[in-house]
Image (tube, rainbow, N blue to C red):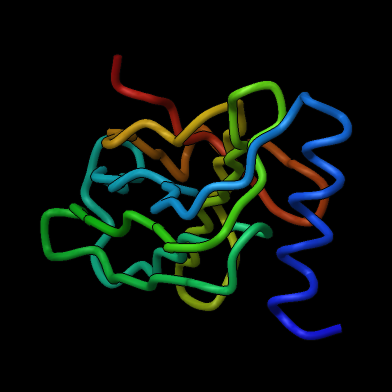
Length: 141
């Protein structure tokens, strides 16, 4: 089905249900994430930081500097999206790889746009096993 037909079908469904609207929007799937990567309080340089969302194909990758600091994101996408009951959905994951090993995972999800900014502190020494990786990034609030 072509794009125009999909839009017409979507509008027809939303109009009959009355619970959703279809609007072109710039949606934030993930915030700009800043943080510091440490091991026992010492900075970890050259760690690979990957920000992704299963809701968009956009991925951003960064590397920690000599002080263990990183900045990555945001993930946004202009699209024709359906808002059910007035709120879109966001979900993102931050993965940090040190010396070829996935050691940190942080994820967040919710209704609406993702927050515009997030700040994390991650410590390899405090990492606990989470499925096939270890994670201990904490939000700075």
